[in-house]
Length: 579
Image (cartoon, rainbow, N blue to C red; front, side, top):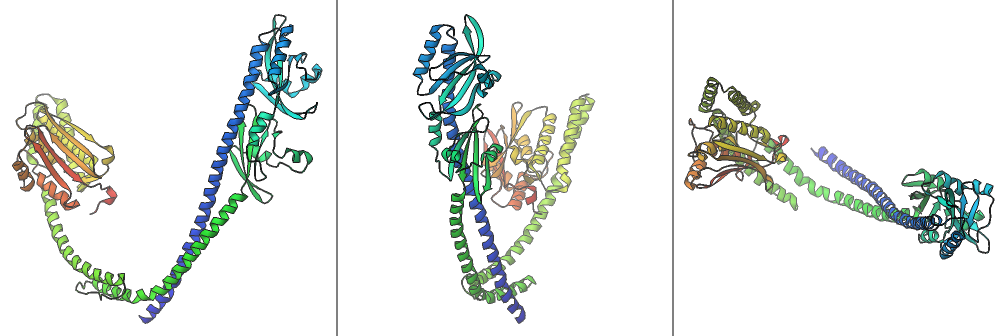
């Protein structure tokens, strides 16, 4: 025994210390993963919101361009004959009014011949016109406005424009013909939207056209001079929503959004370095805290272990004696704090256990008696005799359909009554048994009463004692319906009752006095030719024997109003059933 104590005292602190260390390391890894995932998700959500806001602003500017382009087409080009002087004047006046937005405009026929161009636009040969991208796109896509490339202007002022074209139909000497409208829009409105985004080395955005050429970039001057190279374009275009990738030893997050039907794409680039730095700071705090907690726990484990060992061993020996059947043994009430209380409570438990074991034996004997009485009372010979007699009478009266239905219901009734010898069955089965009983009695009594069932489907999976509802139905039929010749009603209602299951059996009969209710609940009902003989009291006692005295049957009744008997049982699933 001495060697065993020494072995445990050496091994246990080591095992506990190792367990604490494993737990601390596991917590560190879990925290690291959690922080990393949380901050990355947060960064994705924030950047996504910024991307959506930026895309909406760009699409708004695109809509403005579309509206202006369509306005010129429908209000000038389709209204006036291009061969007349009035067309040129109206077009030039329109371009003059839009000088803040449009740099120049031109109208060409389907072969590239110049029909009209604004004053600040240089002449081009029709062969050159036909070779331009914006001209081909307009002829190929006649239903949409085509957004072309970005172009630098150097004639007197240094600025950038977008070449935007669309297919048009114009009037020439009274004939309708096809052509192409070209509008050179300033890039200022789009640039101002993009410049509002935080354009830094660690977080910036850029805009690509349909050919994946840069339309805007905050570091455009460095790119042109060869001091900077944008390496994220291919990766961004290959991703559907966002992409996190590593380049030059650093992680980057890319988000791409297509702008309307233009074919343009706005790309947001964010460095994950700041996020990683924030993670590392939190990691350091969490790791330091967990390590400190681990050291303290290991120290307390070693310090307090021996103070607990001796009282625990003494209590263990007492419990071993108790387990061998020596119920008179008592634990020594010594030790520190909870250990002393543990020994005292063990002694109290031992005393109570002896009393409870005797009570359990007595209850088990009582339960067996009740179950025997229940089994003996499950099938009433008078009920079976009356039912079979009704079937014979129906057959002789050639009411074969009613007789067949009654036989089927009787078979279903007895099948549920047997229930493979089980005392606890699902509410669904108990409800089938009850409805079979009601249907048989309804046929026997020539539809003297009507019955209906209202049950919460979610409760039908729970268990209840077999043949709990039928005695209440029997009571309702033979006592509630007594003296009634028509309009008799019986209702079964299964519902959630404050976390338990409530089963109501209600009738609209003559009702009962309180004295009669007390007689039913507190006096044993013997078998009679009018009922099953199980008795409401027996069911009530059986429920309380199984679940406890807080459950059982309650009866409320009003004279000339009717009676309601309520069964209250807890929710118990089949896996919870105890023998």
